[in-house]
Each structure stands twice: as structure tokens, then as C-alpha cells.
Image 1 (cartoon, rainbow, N blue to C red):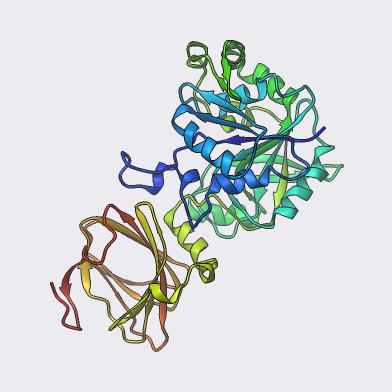
Image 2 (image 1 turned 90 degrees about the horizontal axis):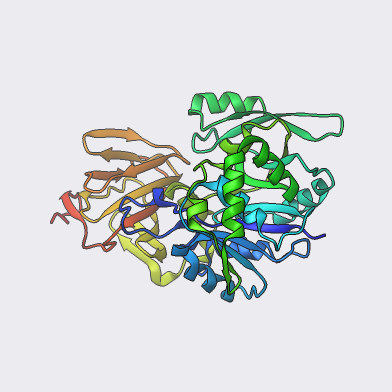
Length: 401
């Protein structure tokens, strides 16, 4: 029997945006004729997979159907949550629909992950399918590339069957603690899960019985039309708003890990998005988008909805004006050199791969005091992203407002 992919597509990704009233959910952001949801849907087209199921809410239904049409996915099911109740009830209700037969293996994917070296990902899924039981759960771990405090971690040990058993979860540690976890071979918890339908039922019955009953009723009383299940609101509203991690993973002992050493990101910050564009900038650089200034040049890599990605090139001894913006914040990632940064009354040196956040209205400047060029990938985020939104206080080239 093929593996059924279930895409969790109800998250907002609002932490990318300072204006919470006017933001675009991360999985739908156009990053250059592709979206994270589109990448995820493409992932489900592999021969090992059955037709996908998408768990979401009414707000995103139209955008999801546009994506399904664009990626030519004709066989699918959508499960609509009437209210947000976190990933626990979302996962359970999607697994309970009648389209999923007993004993089918389920792969829960986030709609907003960027995964490279996908052949390694698929090979590990196929290899570990034989180890699924009616009770156990496999989670996917990513080998850390840095001691990030943005992700949860877990540690493991190998059993006699050479399966990685999860020993401990660590929820978003500080950087100092993250370094220690990595030394003990800890992995990032990616938020992807692999298990049988029976395992979901067993674990929710055992650890979250009330939520199990309410989800069962919500599915049984749901309305179905045009490939979409509209879950019953009175029943679903009674579910506890718990994440799958908290509702089940922290309570069961039968958790194993598929450990992956592949490029992966949830693009959960503008810094991560900057790094992604820097890695693939050859695809975006065009001569007409390169603009020269006395201090060097900048290249517009991609103009999105309410954001602009640039690469700044600051020549040796180049100095940008001391400036601020009324309508945008900026996120910088240093990709070459050691620039001197002014941020309000503070002055500091940044090294390659380090990041800087410039809040809206903050006075700032970049200086290259060295003999080698400085390169910075910049994400501008705001309502006005034009050069006119620059108030200059000082400028060595005489360009003061």
C-alpha cells in the first residue's frame, strides 16, 4: 500500500511580518515563481505516495485550490478546521476520514518547509516504512548547521535493530545550551511525522481521549462537497488546543527518529530567507537590476509582496549615509567582509554569516573600513520599499536630504 501524504497547511507564519493585520501566510509567499506549498505539493507526486490530503482552514481554501490546479493535482482531499486548535486535533481529524484505510502509512508534512536532496529524504522513508507498528511514531530530525535557538531538539540512542530511539526532547534552548546538545549529537525536530493510522488512534485514545472523541464526532458529522470535508464546528471546538508534540510525543515512549543530514529550512525568519536567496542568487541577478552608488552598488534580487531582497556591495572605504526609514524595517546577513555597523547610538563590527535587524525608524549606517569588499544580503519589509523612503542625516558624498 502506498504512503499517504498529509500536508498541514493551517499556519500563518505571521512572525515574518511586523504588521500582523496585513501579512501573507508563509506557505503562499511567491519567492520567484515558486512557493513553499508548491514545493510540498511537488514532493507528493513521487511514486511512493498516494493522493495527498491537506489539512487547513476556510481562510486558505481558495489559495490551496489555486495551487492544486497549478501543480496539476487532480486527486486530493481537503479537511477544513472550523476553528484553530493546533496540530494535535488537525493531525487526528485528517487521519480519521474514511478515505484513509486501516494499516495505511501516513506522512505528515508541513506546508512551509524547504527540503533539498529529496532523494535522501525519500530513501529514508522507504527504508523505515517496514519498522512502523500500530503504536510507534517516527519523527524526522535534521542535523543542525548552527546552535540555533529557533528550533526544538531531541537526542537518541540506537536499539538492537539499529533504529534511533528518541530519549529526550529539548524545546528551543538558548544558544549556549544548543551547543551542548549538538556536542551530544542532538538533532533539530523538524515537525514532520511518519506513522500508521492505527498508531494515531491508539496514542490519542491513550493520552488524549477527550480530543479523540471530539475529533471522531467532528469527522462523523462533517459535511462533504467538492473533495472537501467541512468538520463539525460544535464537536471540533471542544478539542484541546494542543500541539501534536505536547499532546502525544511528550507522553508516549514509542518514538523513533529518522535522522537526516540534508539542507533543510522552514524559512521562519528573514535571515533564513536572505541566506536562501544568497545561495541561489545567480538565478535572480540581472544587469538591469544592478544600481551603482558612490559607496559601491546594490542589486535587486527579488521584489515580492511587501518585501524586497537586495545584495549590497560596499567597496573598500565605502560608507553609506547615516539614515532611517519611515515605512520599512530591514534584515541583513553579512555574506562577505567585516562591516562596521551604526545602529542608533551603538557601533559594532559584524562578521560573515552574522545578522543585523534594523527596526523601522532606527538610524543606521554601514561602513567598510577594510581593504576587501563587503557584501550583505538585505531583506526590506514594509509598505513602501522605494529609495524615496530614505532620510539622510550624514553623507560623505554630499547627499543629505
